[in-house]
Length: 491
Ligand code: UN1
Image 1 (cartoon, helix red, strand yellow):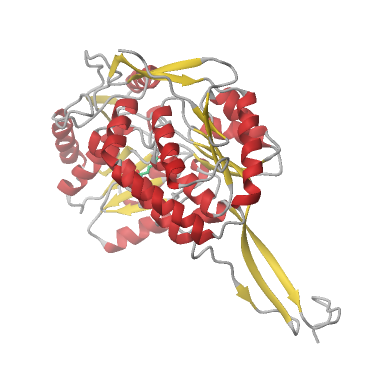
Image 2 (cartoon, rainbow, N blue to C red):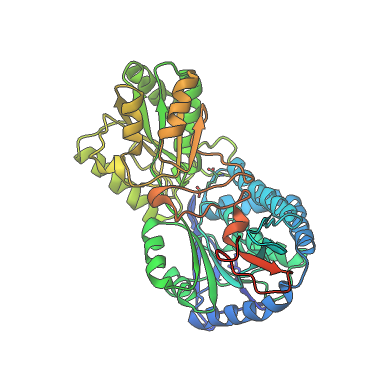
């Protein structure tokens, strides 16, 4: 079988890289299957993309936002028509099971529809003035060229979160997807092109983060960088970007599920399985810590081990599969490394921990118990099908344990007691808290983002998604016909 070669998209044309080089990517569930050759972009490609975006900005900013919204609505329609095909491509490209891949495309549809509607909102405010015949208001204006740097774990949804929000605000985009999921990125950009996004408004450059990403982040012409990925890359972006641009970071986490002694344990069990092992634990919202009240710890642990052992590992295209592979060899090595670390630091491995003999980068769903807060498997983001149980004495102890990490994206509590629930909502230092539901499953019309080392303070999607991608300009209009001095002529 011949291996297809994919191009990049710059200034409305599908082009090869200036480097003339390509790289390949294989199916993580079957590493003998080569998926394609992809352009190895370099600094010159990035410059071309930025220049195209800069030129396109002058026209795109003039299109009324509701008209821009029509293009996003069309993109949502095309995504819906191609949902099944895109989902299958996604499963082959990054491994998540087909049902979840469909959910990923659905999330992109949802956000395109949401942002299309924003075209008729993009609210500013009007307010009073301390002076007579003076009018005060804010208006939302685009920033200019923005960089969207996206991960492989939600290879259509997260690009859509960022790009749809950027476009409705009137920005033009240089899109640098993860090197692990170029096909999903290309298919999404093809859809935007078909939906009527004009040339230069969205540009796609594939290639290594170290060159393509860094050059993009350092460019003086780029007015904002929206990044989702590893904490260390986020920290590097902050250093490289310099002053003069907005930086939105969505990074890792170590998300806890608290299970109280009054919880519905069957419900909690379903939540833990879905939260910890969905997407093979490769979500920044994955439930990688389970903090269980001492009264129910033994019982819950037994239930969890029993159910986890029944999970089926395999290719995500097989409808019987519960847990797919990890995205690549490096991810598998990292997870295996952490399983060793966990054993060495004295946690008890009570389920999984092995690598099945398959031609893909699989690791068995793994549970550690008797984990304490000084252990690395309690502190570090593993990004794989590994979760760690810790016993708590009471609710406050559970909350302290939940907060005893540097991260703060998503958290959850299972309890039937309304007072416990509200106490946890108040004290969990996380951007998201779920009650009686796991840590994953955020919906696009609410703000998404983390506290502490999980984010930079900007929230994505929801009504907040457009705040990052626009300048809320303050406007004063004095129609008194004379000089009026604020703070002085107030008598
Ligand atoms: C991510 O893991 O990077 O809430 C995003 C969720 C998804 C988004 C996850 N809707 O799990």
